[in-house]
Amino acid sequence: LARVLDTDEGAARLGEVALVPASSAISASGLLFYNTLYDENAASHIALGQAYSKCFRGGGASFSEADLAERGANRSLIHIDWMIGSAEIDVDGIAPDGRAVPVMRRGEWV
Image 1 (cartoon, one colour):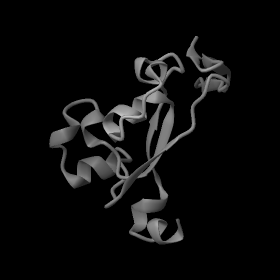
Image 2 (cartoon, rainbow, N blue to C red):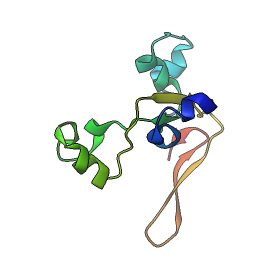
Image 3 (tube, helix red, strand yellow):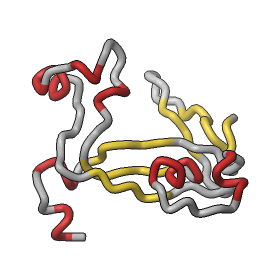
Image 4 (cartoon, helix red, strand yellow):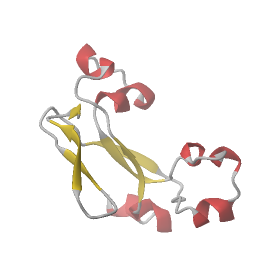
């Protein structure tokens, strides 16, 4: 892990947070596809490294490096996902006034 994190400056930074309900179709299938594009949809997950620029509003896929940096996009040679979700996870968002707002309870959308 230490070698991976030393890849570049962005390798040790968060590049993705994905909330996936425990009842997702991929999770419910019980299958391991050995393909990250499918398997990462089995559970909520985080990733270290490269951010997905195409997820930024306003045409992120065409943004310059300066535009991406201004918006806080992490840049790295790596993007490694870790599954962290389960049917036991609770997730709260924090409102501008500091209140905790339930987003997920027991692995499902509120």
